[in-house]
Image 1 (spheres, rainbow, N blue to C red):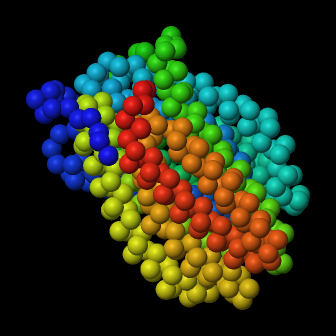
Image 2 (cartoon, rainbow, N blue to C red; image 1 turned 90 degrees about the horizontal axis):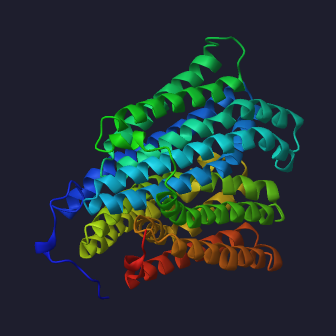
Image 3 (cartoon, helix red, strand yellow; image 1 turned 135 degrees about the vertical axis):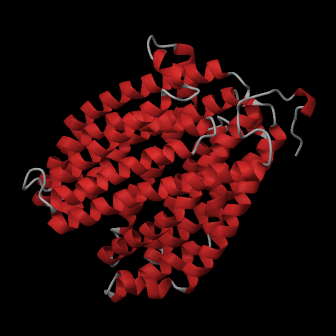
Length: 461
C-alpha cells in the first residue's frame, strides 16, 4: 500500500501532543486513562443493576429494560461526539486551534439541542413502548417510574459526551477520566444512600436509582465545563451561539453514519433475540445469551479504550499530514489488542464450562453458555481488529465504511445464517453462536481491508 506522507521538514510547531515524539508513548498516554474510564462506566451500570436487585427482581428488570430504551436515544448524541473527535482532532493536529474551538462550540450547541429534544421525546414516548418488551405489569409500572426521571439524564449526558470527546481529540485523556470518575462516584454513592440508607427521603426505591444517575451526570457535566473553561478550548463556550451551519454540518456528516451503524447493531440484537426465542429451549437460550453478552461486555472494555485512543491519534496525525504515523498507529494499537484478545480467548475457551456453572445452576443453560463462550472465543482476535481499526477509521472521519461493513456483517450474514442454522437446520442456539462468530470474523477482515486500502486518507471532514 502506498500512502502520501509529508516531509519532516514540513512539520509545524503544533500544540498537538500526539503527532510528535514516540508513537508508543502517544498510544500509552491515551490508552490507560481511557481503559479506566470505560471500566468506571461499566462499574456504574453494574451497581445500578445490583442495587435494583435489592429492591426486587421486577425493579432489576425495569432498570435494565429502561436503560436499553434510553440507549437508543443516546446513540444520536454519541454520534455527534464521534463527529466532534474527528473534526477537532484533525484541526488540532493541523495547528488550527481556532477551528478546533469553533467545532467544539458547535458540537456542544448541537448536542444540547439534541439532549433537550430527545429528553422530551423520551419522556413522552419511552414508557409507551414498554409493553412491547415486557408483559409484566409490575415491571412496566416500575420502568415508567424510572423513566419519568431517567429520561432527563440525556441533557447532562449530552454535555459530558461532547466535552469529553473534545478533550480526547486534543490528546487529553486524563480529564475525561477525572470527569467520569466523579460522576461514577456520585452515582454509586447515591444508589446506596437512597435505596439502602433510605436517605434523604425514605421509600424512593427505583426513583432513587434514577435520581442518583441524574445527579451524578449533572455533577460530572459541571466539572467537565469547568475544566473546559481552563483549557486551550476555553473560548468554545463563547461560540455556542449563533449556529455556524458549515461547521455543524461537518460534525453531522461524520456522525450520521455512526448513528446508523449503532442503530443497525441494536436492531440486529432484537432480531437475534427473536430467533433465540424460537429455539427448542427458549428460556435457557436467552439466559445463556445474556450471560455470554455480559462476559463479552467485559472483553469490550479494553477494546473500546483502544478504539477511542487510536481515533484521536489518527485524527491529529492526519491533520498534521503525518499519514505514515497515522497508519502505523492504527496497526500498532491493533496488534496490542489482538495479542490481548488471543490470551483472553484461550482463557475463555479453557474455562468456559466452569464459568458457565458459576453463572447458572440450570444444566441446559450451562451447556448453551459454555458453547457460546467457546464458539465466540474463536472470533475475539478478529473483534479486536474490527473495533480498533473501526475507531481509527472514525478518527479519520471515514464513518460510512464501518457503517456498511456493520450492516453487511449483521443483516446479510449474521441474521440469515442464524435463522438457517438455528431454526431451519435445527442446530438451536449453537447455530446462532456460529453465525455470530462468522459475522465478527468477516467484520474484522473487511475493516482491516478498508484500513489497509488507504481510502480513509482522502476523506474530508
